[in-house]
Amino acid sequence: MFRLRTSFLFRGRGLPLSAPQIFRHARLFSVLAPAPRETRPIKRLLIANRGEIAVRIQRACKELGIKSLSVYSKEDARSLHKANADEAYLVGQNLGPVAAYLDIPGIIKIAKQANADAIHPGYGFLSENASFAQAVEEAGIQFIGPHHTIVHKMGDKVEARKLAIEA
Image 1 (cartoon, one colour):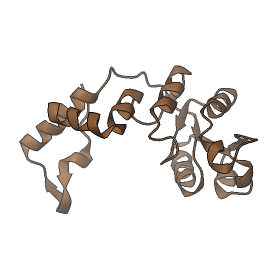
Image 2: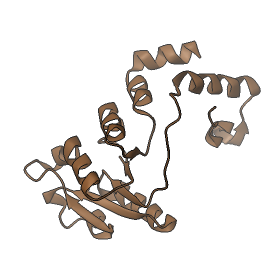
Image 3: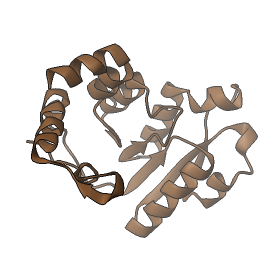
């Protein structure tokens, strides 16, 4: 069984969705949804992003009593997201600033060494990368985001359209 997000209950101007619209959304998610994932309490969260996105996630972590772990490139050594983190780790030491944040094996290695319970991909960079989500899950770390099969299906516009039509 899945949970219908409350954001689907309202469309523009705060009007509720009709019953057929809710049913259509429910069917779409039942087609996409894989088997439920195991969840564990999160005490240490690695944020695999930088800048304002990372700072916002860190703020949420503080409010929830979760330790925030950040990765940073050598170019971001004096950045706010590094300074605000409870712990910060250099990633992609010999890589450029963008490539460092896309270093999937490096990020997972850091997460394991830092005993991270989960990884939050942030926005952009790795959030839409199905292979990253799969690598995180295979490493035994919780991925904050959709299951890698859903990321893969929704990343392909043709496949996403087929699924919407099936639902």
